[in-house]
Image 1 (cartoon, rainbow, N blue to C red):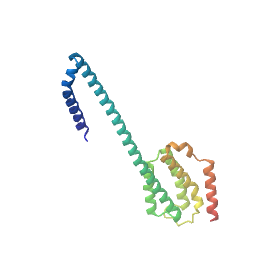
Image 2: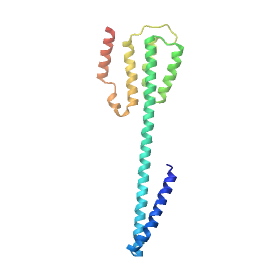
Image 3: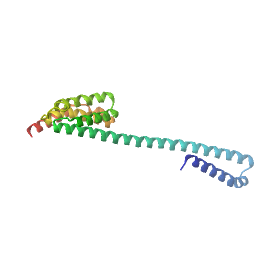
Image 4: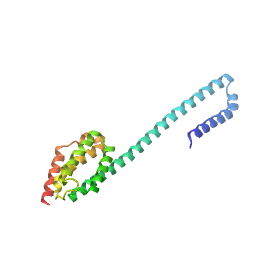
Length: 192
């Protein structure tokens, strides 16, 4: 419903109640008491309406912000996943075609749109390392050992996790546990 229409309905209902209750109240109270009681009731109604309006507006703003944040989170997640898929394709090929290079440039720009400047640097450095492992654009395919890509890839994933889950960011710093997990994965991949 329209906000203006809601206001008119409230005012109209208030007037109807006031007009209907006036004859009843005039028989129960003296005229001076009636004026005082009516003024107090009207003031109470006004205060209630104002407080209710403020609460509804605050609730609406909070819901809109929550919905906006959910959409942004979903966009970030999709962009980060697309970027990781692009990096995965390059790592599996061991080669970056011009088409893949163009796609990766767009993907990295999408990542930059949703990533802080300091974190973008932390993404671009390991990404450049992966590109160097592939030998650059339109170079001859190289055999890339996946364990060599694992460390820079995990650095990128850590940054993406910090961007997606900022409240848990202090717990996501590069830790000895992450280093140990990457080392275990590298040894498993080498033996595979």
